[in-house]
Image (cartoon, rainbow, N blue to C red; front, side, top):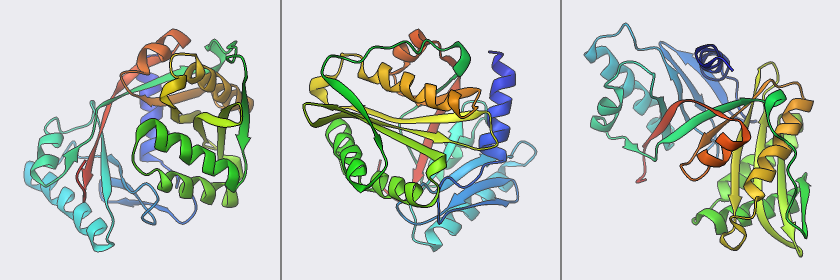
Length: 263
C-alpha cells in the first residue's frame, strides 16, 4: 500500500467529499470547512478544514464560526484533527478557543485483499449479525461493560442506520453461553474505496483470547464482499500491535478536540 496515495485518497473521499454517516444528519461545505450536523446522539463535528492559506486571525475566525454554529444548536461537537493538517499550530488555537483534546489515536488502513482473514474463534463463541433492537441492546451492553460510561448514543445511531440505510452498516456481536462478550461495527461507504472499523469492545474477562482479531477479520471479509479496497480504523495503543500483525499500516495520527463538555 502506497502511503501518500492512500492518505490523499482517504482525505479526499472521507473528509473533503464526506457524505452524511446516518439519517437526519447533513454534511455542509462552508468556506474552508467541511462539517457534519445532526441530532444530539449523532456525531457532530468538523471533518476537514482547508486553512493552509489563511492568516492567524482568519483561522481564529473560522474556529469561532464553528463554535457559534454548534452552540447555537445546543450541540457538543468535535474538531477532528490529523497530524498532517495545516496550520501546524491548529491544536494550540483550538485549545485557546476552549476545546479539550481527547486521546490521540493512530489512523491505520489495510487492503482487504492482502489481509490475513483466516482467524479461528475461541471455542464456544459464535458471531451474530446485529439486525434489530435486541441485537443493538447487546452492542450497547458490551460497550458499557468494556469502556465504561453510557453508550446509549451508539445504540441510537445504530438503530437509525439499520432502519433507514441498512446497506451502509454491519454490526456483529460475539456471544458465549448466551452472553454478549464482544461487539463491533463496520461502516460501508458506497462510492468510496474505504470501509470503517468502529467499536471493537470486549468485556474484560474475555480479553486476550483473540476476539478483537476475529471481529476485525470478520468485518474485513464483509468489506471485501461489498467491493471496498481498504478498511481503516482509528486505533488505540492497545489495538495497534494486533492490527499491525494482521497487515495494517499507519497513515497518520488523529486527535479529536471536543467543545461543549469535559473530556
